[in-house]
Length: 480
Image (cartoon, one colour):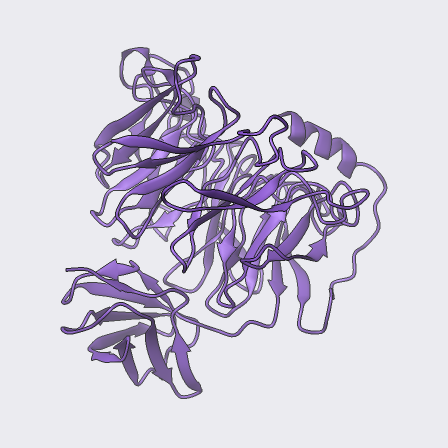
């Protein structure tokens, strides 16, 4: 990608060491790991995920033992273990160059995609879908371009999401019957169904070439973005059976003040609306943060590069997360106080943006993946380049937010089993779903298994421990 090349050149310019303390005493930035070719390099659109064991898991795009990127585990203290190096098989039949991160399935295994590799008679490097155990045993469950003309798609840039039906959903950037990417469903065993084929011709209003993946909203449908099309990007809704509706087309104004070219997917916030970013467009043509209702009413919350030299950042390629304080957090690929290296920001639901950290190169540069808030309250993320080897970094950012618990999945029927993820659960004395007591089993200090109690209503899940009570970061939705 051109922007990667330009950033690498920028990172070769002389740079100076960054202070680790930012803003106030409540906000502390630390570099946990510097990537290098031996352990993997240049993580791209990758968001770290917290496993049930309390550790973090992710991927690198390049290098590792076989040169095709890696899957890794890292502790909150920065100790990294390489679980798998891609291209271990002839002609990289096991996949190569994962762009996105992982999702942990309900079976405890991790699932992801590679943008290249795989063996196919239709395309020499079409990409794959894989399953990997926490111990590092990898299995390719699907290789794209398995159908004539690659009507099943190829080159998935985004990761997967597990739906409430237990299947995984994702997108491919290319291929499909319209030659412009697809939305697909795949079972844990690897049976793939193409749900929608995007197309690029002038008559196509559904968009094309999705970089980002999809999310499943509280109404059961999936939402995502496309990067191209008859307009520079769209927002779409798609049912689990494949009925797609374009709910918004970007650049609805002559100068694209509403944004253009969304590279990341969406999140659904606690208010039910969807939030995301565009990498271009906006008042200053340097990207935006937006809110959109499920019905498609879009509001631009912020246009980047609002000040000279863009100290607020520009060109956000990653999506947002909503933290436990109700605010949204994200990164910009470039800009910040140091112009070229990117930034970390907080933005309120009303659109008030605060820059929390500006990268300087030695502490990382060019963050492309979304942040992750661990159950200890701290944010963790990656940069694509920078660091001691100019191969990217893993960092933490403490913003003074306290610990919480995470529920997987976030919805279910009475009697169903859920996993409660935390960081210090050994003294757990009770679990309740919106005030209704639940039976539970303590698996480890980081994991509880609980049963949704009869009579429970939708709301926060609380776990009482010796130090007090931990609340879930999102409301659990009880379904009939």
